[in-house]
Image (cartoon, helix red, strand yellow):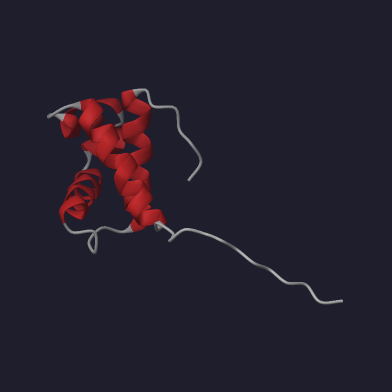
Length: 90
């Protein structure tokens, strides 16, 4: 018995791209001082490492080749939580 799989999928957006879309939305909701607000909300982002995470993710918006997907996820989830966005599984 042979199984045949046929899919009519649209081009897939990468996880990284989807995270950056979510990050942009959460960042816009948080406002211009999003880094200060996030550092106040979550003490991890009030550290040198946390600041580096936020900086690399912000840079990934202008150049998607930058930014590690795990860092993007970490910052995005924290920012969504702070902004009151109900998290959807990644």
